[in-house]
Amino acid sequence: MTATVRTTAPVAETSTGRRPLAVALVAAPLLWLAAEALSPALKSDSTAQLAVIAQHSGRWFGYTALLTLGTILFVPAILGIMRLTRPRLPRLTLIGGALLGYGTIIAVGDSMSQLTTWQMVAGNADRTQMAALLDRVSNAAGASLFFGPGGLAFLVGAILLTVALVRARVTSVWVPIVFLLGIVMQLVGFTASSVVLITASAILCLTAMGMLARQLWAESPSEQAAVDGSRAFVPAI
Image 1: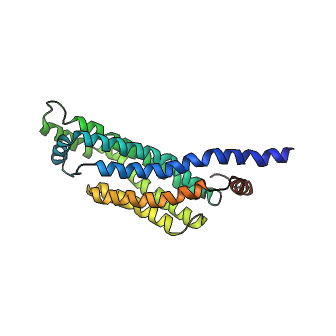
Image 2: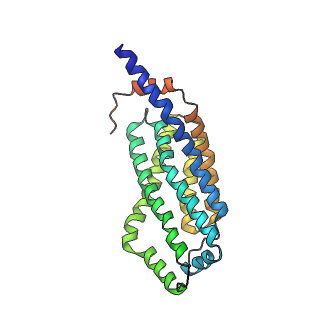
């Protein structure tokens, strides 16, 4: 009787938890791609960027909303990746997932801050003063205290989870490589203010994460429960 309870409980948990994570793996890059399709030009100069936002206020709001929602959904997507690699590589999965999760939380804050930028061109606000304020905020040491480590954690976490995916052999080798390439291209694209690069990164992420979602969706609950049971003695950290 006791043995039966131990076997069936993990199966129920696995069958109810994996598919929402699989949906998030597809939804996050889809929203990123939609955001870039709506995005006006990105400029590295604050004055030029505010001028673009003033001309395309509605598009900037839609771009910001889609980008923020996609980044929020990237958090459960990370959990989906971790679910695939945790049974075989629990320590590497935990460290990589924690770093990528932290970087994603910082990215959510960064994308939501664009709503403030959106309002800098509203009403009769002085454009020169708003551009100067945007520069001060962007270059403030206090802001760098969060955004600098956040970007680094995002990159390192993605690398570690890529290594975990390759070593765990849960999918074809090209899938984690394309995933990492998409993440790196995304970071480069935002740094270079390139909509083209960011769009390409979203396509790469959608391709790789879609394959991971398919793997997670089709995962046999009984097989996953057996793997979890066989690895139960492995400590989480």
